[in-house]
Structure formats: C-alpha cells, structure tokens
Length: 65
Image (cartoon, rainbow, N blue to C red; front, side, top):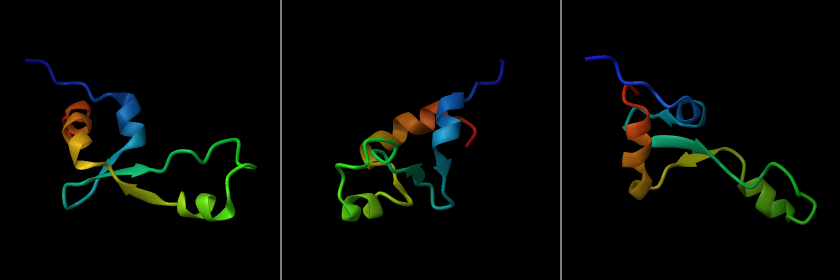
C-alpha cells in the first residue's frame, strides 16, 4: 500500500497543536485595509483554532500530522 499524500496547501496553512487542536491564521487582513477599523485589524493578529466542525476535514488533508 503506498503512502498517503498530504495536501500541500493544507500543510502550509495549518499546524497541529500538542493538545490535538488545529491552529490557523486569521483571514481578512491582506488587502483593502483602509476601510477596516484599527480595532478590527488589531484583533485579526495572531492565530486561532479551527472550528470543531471543520477539524475532521483538515485532519483528513494532513494524514501524518
């Protein structure tokens, strides 16, 4: 049986934390920043966890993570 391949796009976007949750970066901070408030842009910094309803599909794309 051949090895399963990891989706390379998912490998670039997600990391698996030690506790098993999936870490992702925030969206909506790339362009058109002039109409967004300073508070909104500040709160989009950093990372957050993938929602529980999407965790299974992300893990399926990264079989060895």
